[in-house]
Amino acid sequence: MYQYYPILFASLLLGASHINAAPGTEPTTDFSQAEPGEALPGGATTHHKKINANAFSHASANMSFEREIDFKVGNGFFKRLWVTAPASTQAADGLGPLYNARSCQRCHLKDGRGHPPNGPDDNAVSMFLRIGIPPQTDEDRRLLAEHRVNNIPDPVYGTQLQDFAIAGHKAEYSIGIRYEEIPVTLADGTVVKLRKPTYTAEDLGYGPLHPEARLSPRIAPQMIGLGLLEAIDADDILALADPDDRDDDGISGRPNRVWSAEFNKVMLGRFGLKAGAPSVNEQSQGAFNGDIGISVPLNRSGAGECTAKQTACQEAPNGNSPQYDNLEADAQVVDLVVFYSKNLAVPARRDVDHPDVLAGKRLFYETGCISCHRPKYVTRSEGVAPEQKGQLIWPYTDLLLHDMGEGLADNRPEGVANGREWRTAPLWGIGLTPVVNGHSFYLHDGRARNLLEAILWHGGEAQAQRDAVVAMNAEQRAQLLRFVESL
Image (cartoon, rainbow, N blue to C red; front, side, top):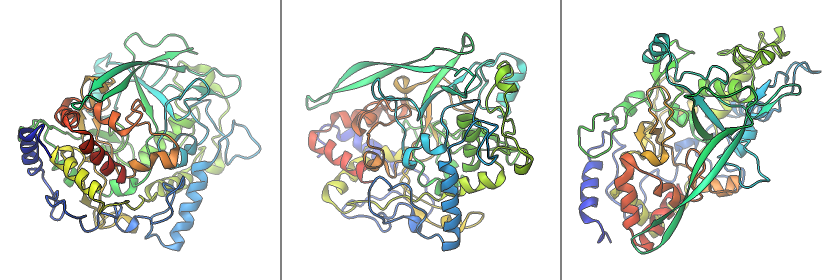
């Protein structure tokens, strides 16, 4: 089966066998049948409901009836459309003044994956550009060195560009995307055309960007399994790190270290495309403030992400209300949204025992993909919610940063992550993206139009794995993709 690259397979499998693993989570070497528990990627939280457009929107299957009420209320706040202040009700006003969407659901469509604009009649509501500049002062360098900030903001535009504004205000920009086709010829002669994007910030509403501004495109990621990822013991993640590539396998994952405003200390980054947030709570509050312009306990500004130089934005009426702790979304609202986000269940696997899925799993493992897409963990038994406690889960990620090569580089650092590094994306549920979201756009900016294109964009530490896929014959590629689609 591996006539094209036997030496590569042998060396990568040897490297995979040296992955640090907690007892019971070692990668398998038996591909004759599915492993125990493999059909339940979220453990007891896994749902078995009908696979349709709502497949990412169900509660943890082991949730009590009483807690499911909180889940449903949190879902309501997740879908809430915020309006401009002042409004007839103080419960839902405070939008903007600058924003990317009016609700969480508008970006995370059906709790799934966003997409880039797909033609002139589509919009960029589930995609935006992050922005930052190199450190300019000793104080900037100190803040970065102490992990107090992840990035130095543009002095006018902050750390995120907003493409909408309330009435009477100007949006910050509109996103420009141009694609260049790059052909890749596979070993069997198949030609795959990748699309290489170039991004620009156009129609700038507040003057030019800083001359050293760095732009990074982001599409909204899927929401399933977040509470389980938070419940993985930090030591189990750190045990996988090999920043100096001591085992000489070409993989040198390293953790992001970020400041937790909630706990007032440096913590392991887990969430976001560069692992820039330490918890679901801080990721959610950052999205409330940056994406919708809503004040929250960890950022009480009613002006959202408006900078000091955007004076009209700062002076606009906001929805901060004494009734809600002088905030627009108080702790109760945030806690319910976080509870909802932590308990979006992973769907059960499909066809785990199908011969082609098992053959594709062997290829995935022996090609060395599991060096970054770590298959399984057992979550903590202490300090976590009852739904996530002590679960065997299969997210296929190490939550570490990896150099993915120049082709995927955004050249914008975030915390410890440099401009070529990205957090390994969890793969659970990835094959259901077309069902839930009606598209198959992947990677951090949606440039890949299918899973094969996503693989072919891998470089840097994943170059050997990418090259192994290029060397496969058509049957092997189909088996590999069938496995990934089953996750």
